[in-house]
Length: 110
Image (cartoon, rainbow, N blue to C red):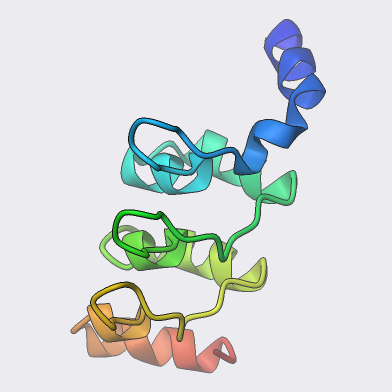
């Protein structure tokens, strides 16, 4: 594990690197795969939370809206902007129909 973390820290530039085949970003992939440890590590290492996937314009917050609210909370606290529009013109906040979820995000100051 220590070796893995050492290797990870040597390659921090990859935190915001884009997968050239899929266009995905590590933070987006961590949210999609529900990889909570990787997700938290990327956020702690200052991954750019507002970077969007080229194919659809979604940010990690767009994806997180279909997941556990804890992902959204961490992303917003790290500076994710809930009003960024994807290629379809949707914002992360507009993607949820859950009134309670919208209320929580609003109370968080977004």
